[in-house]
Amino acid sequence: MIEPWQALDEEIAQWAAPPALWLRDDDATGPAPAVETLLNACAVGRVPVCLAVIPSSLDPEFFPWLTSQAASTTVVPHGLGHTNYAPEGQKKSEFGDHRSLSEISKDLRDGLRRVQDAFGSQSRPIFVPPWNRFGSIAGAALIGAGYTALSAKTTQIEVTGITVVDVHIDIIDWRGSRGYGGDGAVLGALRERLAALRVQGKESEPTGILTHHAVHDPAAWTFLETLFSRLGGKVGWLSVDDVSRVTR
Image (cartoon, rainbow, N blue to C red; front, side):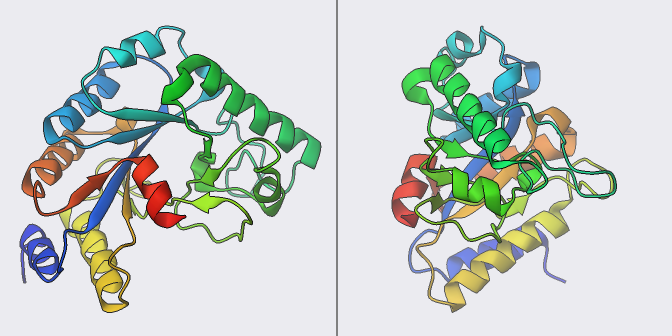
């Protein structure tokens, strides 16, 4: 059996041009050791990162602290409070169709306003739904609330007039260890995604990597550092702005 890193290398070698990757990290609220570890790794690897922050929990010191970091970062709203409003027995969701249009629209606007007020030109009007779930009501309300783009994980709901910049590879095993998912699973999913794009003639389509700094175990940090160093020069790391332009 081919070692996962070798299998990924062999897939990338079949590409005529470097595959496009991008990085989104969820749930930041302020300065924290795990956020600093992430930003340091990104700075060393020269990997831009899109931070999806929780607007209602923002630390006032986050913006000045972030500007002192070397990593290239953009900031987007991750819902409003990352609050679960789903009825008992249903999957967690802050912006599901069990809420009214007025409630959803108000929270969408509030989340965006808070992030724009806190981060200014470093912010982007890109909606990242908590738990990567949202309903058709929220999808239809995005433009009116001031958003231009949406980033979930393989969006299934059709949205009109909104650029979709999804992530595809989540490095955390949420259903098992709730730590790093392992090289076999994570690298296997990345290789399969790249192979499918190549076979389908969609080489220009970016692939999003999703991280959650707060739950990273040592294996997750090792993976990221290895990913950034091993793929240096073999892939193109895009900012979320780049991804939006390519996807539009």
